Length: 135
Image 1: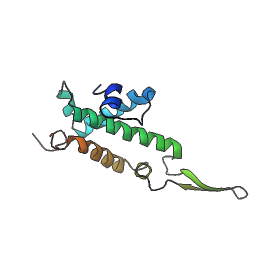
Image 2: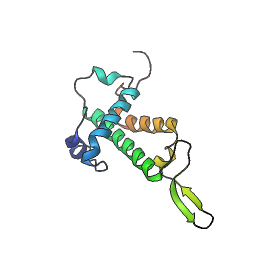
Image 3: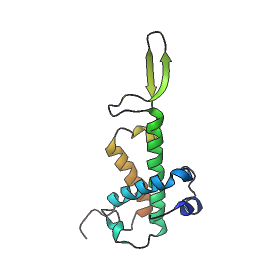
Image 4: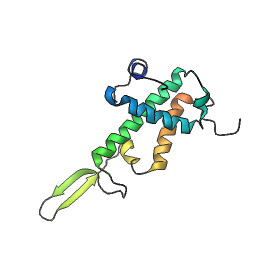
């Protein structure tokens, strides 16, 4: 693992992900960061604070997307969402996902990828890890 609970709470000051779920989301975040850095993290034996912070930030994005998806019960076909209004007689339900950034990327993998890239870029800008060209 690139980082752990102690770093998440003590240096990144994260408080969104419960300790019992943190390992799951850190693992997902590491997978995302490996993809964003074109596998360059595999060559590193030590991870500086910015890489660890990028993993923590990505873990929070992964967690929030997962929680929003469960809260809205969005399905692959785009139906579902947070109930905005409900009628009983004719059985009418209106859904609303609001203007929240996380909710806006739920059914759009490209938008999720852009959100993850921008999240990692905040910590890895200038490190060369996000460079897409040939070295």
